[in-house]
Length: 191
Image (tube, rainbow, N blue to C red; front, side, top):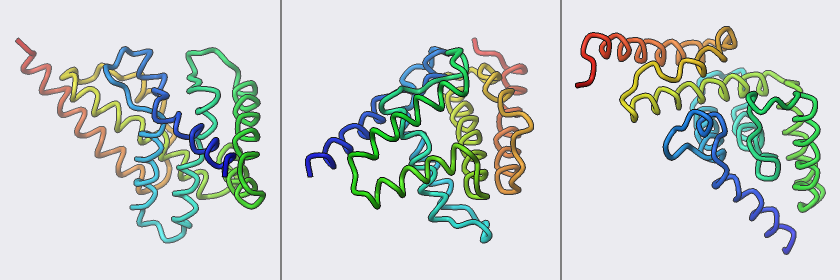
């Protein structure tokens, strides 16, 4: 039980690891990595796509950033190569999963690898959820700060990355709402 407790405490660190992109943009009270993973899991849970294994999508969402409890949230602005980021995260996942039973170790590590290498339709769907959740969060931060359009770089970084019909539709809704708010702010600037 001691190693399980250690695993749970390490994973619990995700509640206190802020998402780096928001920190770099000086967003007040940025979401944690676990906040992000939780909403992704909910997004996976509500998919209508019957061709996807919904349970697997939820599991992938819950595991995809787990290594960040040890390595932190490495963002593109950190100038760490994809290879080095993967190496660090793989090492962290091996450490984390060693604290579990053999069956759990195998399941969680294989899910993480499936996501990392985009080996399945579910992994590719969850990768798109990852990007979609980020721009949804950007929309919410723009709303909270009453500064429509200020987080454009997050939208730019996802351009052309969506192909799943449900996600394309959701992204379209996000963009429509955002564009309406940007247009309204130009017509009625804050006093």
